[in-house]
Image 1 (cartoon, rainbow, N blue to C red):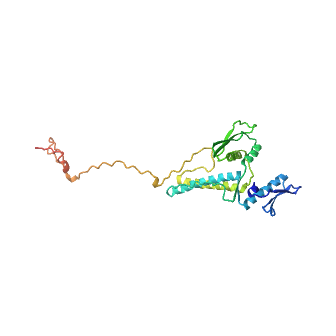
Image 2 (image 1 turned 90 degrees about the vertical axis):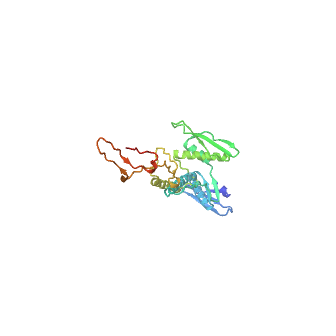
Image 3 (image 1 turned 180 degrees about the vertical axis):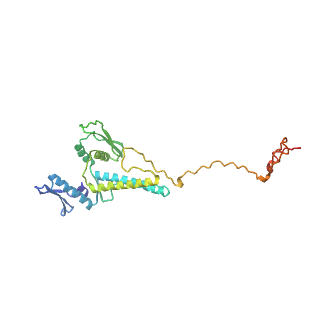
Length: 315
């Protein structure tokens, strides 16, 4: 596939040592004079040595000619990059909330498509899926495809566990919509592979297969999540377990707490006026001259009430 993309002659496999099953592959350039030779080394079989030599050739040609290959490993690696990017966006949101800054739209380009190099090659996921199904023993229905419109296709299939297993249920898997029927089937095969790999703990060796890079992607993903959870505990006071749990917890979007987002407080009705207390000097009290005579107590009325109340007159 790499040689077809670069329009190079077909690679040539050669046997170096039959006793040790040592083989190599020769890749010639367009001039057909200079060739790259990749040795598979000693192995248990000639096919295994040829496979190792082909892996070396593919990875070296990818670096020399700047080729990006979309395969199972690159798709899984992009899922980790997308998860890390989402955790980073949540961390940025919390940092702005902590600094009482205005909320801004976040970048939605979480995991850009593979590109940037001169050539882009996509493997045939259907071929890989056929080999995996033969290996694990899953049975499936034929792949179906439907045309919703001239440029909108969907594809789906059902897969069932092996007959020797106790489960008789099956799962329906749907592919992402695509502009062509062939692309829709490739998207479906890619989803089925992602479904089967964790169930059977499969290890698919393809062009981008490098265990060190895969571990680095998962490590960076875990570090980004731990940083986000630490900031979340400090800002929102929510302590979350960093290890996966069997409980399903729903995390909603963060509610801004800045002063610019607060609802203004409602002012109640005005308080009633306080009663005016009269000074002691303005109050006169008459003293009774005898026990049989009741003398009322007089108070000085304000001037505005003189026309309302009439003072009783005594002879």
